[in-house]
Image (cartoon, rainbow, N blue to C red; front, side):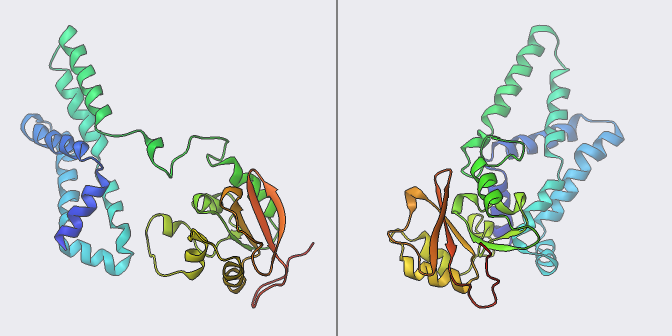
Length: 256
């Protein structure tokens, strides 16, 4: 169990350099900081939270009251940035003139190399609009929205983390949990859609069973034939939309 906790910290800290800097900052403050209030804020509180997080009993209790895959969120309580920032400022103020400037530059370089560009992550994109999501998501959701009703839409893999942020009336048979590898179980529809050799009849039948009013797919990854029980509806921003022909069980029919 303790190894699982350490693995969570490893994944959370990325390359690990920022974790090393944080620990060194704690040691530095433990030796140099004399003010009681600052020691409590920048030393005692982080150490107590970290000790609580590392405790296997805490891990077990958390798993009983919540999803264990979200245990890493307790690390958000640790003031990593304030501790490192305060330690860096405290060190820099020990110098003056050129040495102080050199120290500031050295810390800036150290912080820069301790992380990586956020846009190198496949799930992060540069803002294209005020919604901070791909413009294709906005266009697709606006085109499919039905006022006062929820609809089920099989969305492309790359859009699943954005759709319900923009329009909560658009539901999906599977979503972001598969991107994040959370609560993941077998899903025949997802496997059929993600297959390199997509079977349009199988996808159409499974989508109908799951109550999907629409299937949206990139034109670069399109089906060889129209999915069973669906018809081509429209094309938007390089994505093809298929609309269901005959509503499946426990599913309301679309109106033209």
